[in-house]
Image 1 (cartoon, rainbow, N blue to C red):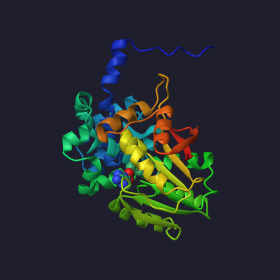
Image 2 (image 1 turned 180 degrees about the vertical axis):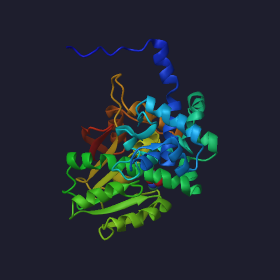
Image 3 (image 1 turned 30 degrees about the horizontal axis):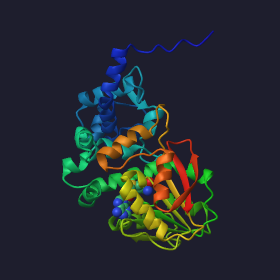
Image 4 (image 1 turned 60 degrees about the vertical axis):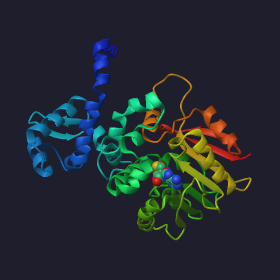
Length: 341
Ligand code: SAH
């Protein structure tokens, strides 16, 4: 028997699903913030039990949970006990590559109001976040350490999700010293050093971010091989690397700013050193791709953008590099390798 044909919903219904997408996102935010998937990890629970454990209003929480069951984020049984689905398991705090902190950061405090101000970016080309908060996001994080901690955790989670892929597709063992420029709390450099015992690392980020990273490097047992250096990549980056890696950095900045960061890396590099950019590469074709919406996230949050392979090549050439290869991965991000020209 042939499989039943998937019926396309009529356009009005399909459009309604798109329009109400943020209702789903915000409901997911609530369960991530409350740690509901963590609570369900020990077995199914009723809305009353979950509300008691989180100090919430049970009938309202029930409605959130019921709605999320309807879109497959949670599951329920005939006794109205809720349990995790494979989707909500990705929100458990300590699963590898957990999306919990990313969910809270993207849909909670600072990103969400900026998205509400998307029209500002479209009308003016300016940064919706800066217009809403009167400061850029990096200054905001400096002034709001709790939100910064959530953001740094969210980046660590997203990095953990791609670590295996990066290590399997790119050989870091040939480098003596890898400098992770804008390396956040060090999730990527930690994994690179753990799997390459002869390689040293330098974690470079804003001073207050690096401060929070130090204990994580120590806990991972690599602090004897990894310096943590605070600074501003618009001024300079640390010397001494034969590889400079930047994950989710170049997409934060416009072409002029990105060129400046790249030139500062170039200034420290010998002719055979390598530059490794880990970012989304926007396909030239019209298929769905995560890059096309994270691009809007950059529009509202930082004034940066996602780029096509050609656009990356243009940037690299302007900063004195030649593009060696673009390695696609099974994730939305690609590995872009370059060398001083
Ligand atoms: N590479 C990490 C973090 C990406 S988020 C990862 O993929 O997980 C972008 C990082 O750039 C943040 O950690 C932020 O603190 C850092 N950053 C922003 N402006 C900076 C500057 N001027 N100098 C150094 N780091 C900066």
